[in-house]
Length: 252
Image (cartoon, rainbow, N blue to C red; front, side):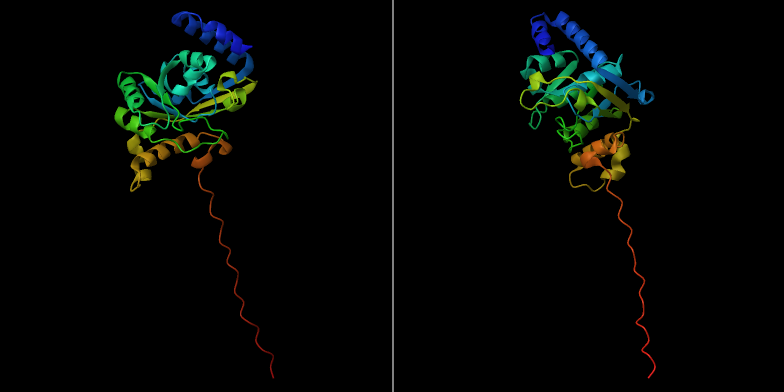
C-alpha cells in the first residue's frame, strides 16, 4: 500500500513532494513505532559530525526525527536513487550522495564543506547496512572527513530499525514496515586528538582512527550489536595445579 502512495507522490513538483513525503513518513513512524531518544544533553551547539551504525533504510528518517529541530545533512549511497520509495525517502532529508567502495572523493569534499559552512553532517561509516545487525568494519573516509573538518564527533547508536524495515535484498524498493521499538542513543562528543593513544604506531593510521571512532559507537550499543568492535573477551584465568612430591618409598 505505502509503495503505491509513494508512486502517486512522485509526480508532484519537488517542494510539495518533499513536504508530502515527510508528512507521510512521520505518520507511518508515529503509527508503527515507539521511539526512545537518549543522550540529548550530549549534543553540542556547534556543527558536528555524527557517526552511526547502519541497520536499515529507515535509519536516516529515524535519526532526522530524533535530531529535530536541528538540521543535519546525511551521506547516503547513490543506489538509493534507484527506486521510487528510496529516492523519495532521501529527498525527505538533506542528502549528500556517495558511491560506496569507489575512489570518488567529491562527496567527502562536500561533507567537509558543509561542516565548515556551519551545518552538521551524519555519516554511516560502515558504508552499507549490516545484514546481521552487528557492526562491520568501517571505511576510512570517516576519519578523513573528521580530520579535514576539525569539528566535534558525536557517536550515535541505533537499534530497532532492522525490525521496523528489514532489509530485502531482492527488491529494496518494496521493503515493508512492521511494528517496532526504536532507540537512538547519543554519546559524548570527542575530537580526533583524543584518540592518539589508541592509534599510535598503527600501520594504517586512517583505518586505525576510523576504528577508534567506531569503538565509541560500539560502546553505546547492546553487546549483540557490537560486531567487530566488541571488546575482546577477558582472558580466562590460568589455573595452576599444585605440584605434589612423589610419596616417600616405604621403609625397608
